[in-house]
Length: 229
Length: 225
Image (cartoon, rainbow over all chains, first blue to last red; front, side, top):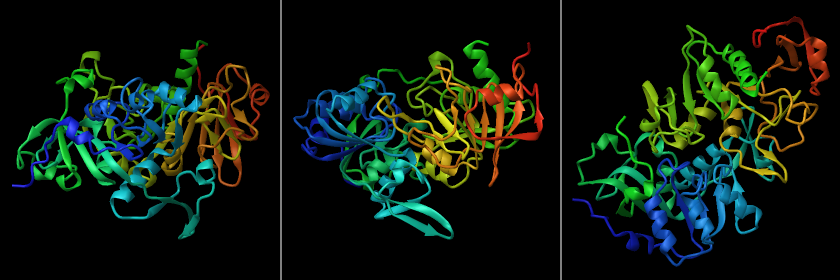
């Protein structure tokens, strides 16, 4: 039987220290690890660099950490749907680095896959290309984008087993698999917890080898009830 | 025309560009409306860049689900045969040329096909989201936009002054007044003029460089008068 990685919320977030880089899965509340974010709100940490595609949605998610002054820098793609993040940026409270959505995903994928980076056509001729190496392959020019890694990842899955095998639901996978892979220590919150073997092996989307700790999700943080439609 | 009418005129003409069997991506705003105007007999499959293909109708309110949403955060359903996947896979599809056509709105577009859609310096800081990847990867980029901004200035500009989302990526521009199509080495051609406008009206409200096609079609589309 593989190791049981289930821990309390407090124990899981105790791995996060001030100044760390934390990759947070989710996209506009779809798959946002709201239980772990709640745990991090209570923790005595600051100066975090957060990697999160949208910084939450409206007033929930990573934006809650921004409002508590725990975030020094946000690496994101689109923050227009979290107005308080935009406000914090304009007030000079946080640094924001914006990247194309696919580039951000691939930078994290590369970071988790042992690659130094990748060549992409995205952003050619735009501000994204400024200062980056241009490399020609078979007559087409690409930008060299470097890999991203984080100290800790916070992810959410609908189903998880005690070893950390994860299965997502709907569009909630989004950045969660690449966050889990590109971080030194990955914490997964799961809505339904299973014993190893209960999740069909071929339907596991993030194998447990990427996951260091499993926490039961507190569904009350989701805000909106899950439906059966 | 009301603002809703204008948006639907643009979306209806844009939908007429669709070809049976295409995989398409719709941006936020007017592009989303394209789905309501798909011509009879044309089957297209809608891709959502956050991680879904086969997006169906908007769900009933009580059936909306926080784990099933589109790139704007709105609830979605899937048609039979649709699927969900992670964002790295989704953008691999986009950059890999597996999305046939993308529709997006814009702040500015110019005669070289440059598109500036995500930032007004000093005003709007939203981020580019998936637009740069879509412009770089989709086979055909269709810009759907009102012809002029609220202050009456042409959104079809001589040269984009806002930060670019994509350089030389616009293939078709559709407004409530006209349709322009870009040909390699030749630039944009005015091919269609909507009801209520003439070729001279378009010239008067368009700063972008273009050529009037020899076969320009008048009264090509628009709301019935």
